[in-house]
Image (tube, rainbow, N blue to C red; front, side, top):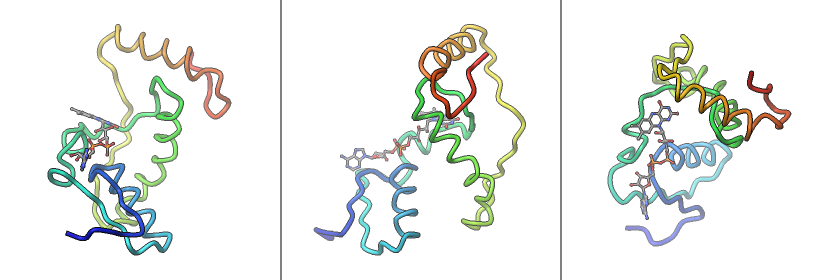
Length: 118
Ligand SMILES: Cc1cc2nc3c(=O)[nH]c(=O)nc-3n(C[C@H](O)[C@H](O)[C@H](O)COP(=O)(O)OP(=O)(O)OC[C@H]3O[C@@H](n4cnc5c(N)ncnc54)[C@H](O)[C@@H]3O)c2cc1C
């Protein structure tokens, strides 16, 4: 195995893969992604594929907001159709929905980047 690189990324999930992809687009060529298992074997390979803009932390909301345009043009940019359908997002449990709304209000409501939860 190689022992050095300009950039070493630990973890071959979506975050590691995305960092490697975007660094490559910016011209970085010597990137090593270290994965202890298989690529996508962590949370990335288990997730349900839902895309939403409401989270309990501001950073996750902003990450999701920034991701959306990329996902919308994913097929053109990457060459693989992710079968992205924008049909809304439903939390079927009233308890979870209330908790999410309350978290969004208390933690994110003051941020100007997105509207206050109602
Ligand atoms: C059941 C489930 C459903 C989900 N559904 C959704 C959803 O619908 N929508 C959504 O947005 N999110 C969903 N998520 C969350 C989403 O999958 C995660 O937020 C995302 O995949 C995290 O990506 P990651 O790259 O940070 O982590 P991971 O995908 O876990 O990748 C981390 C990688 O690092 C490797 N690693 C760790 N330590 C080391 C080390 N020391 N050396 C080498 N490799 C290492 C691991 O093996 C792993 O492959 C879901 C998660 C789960 C579990």
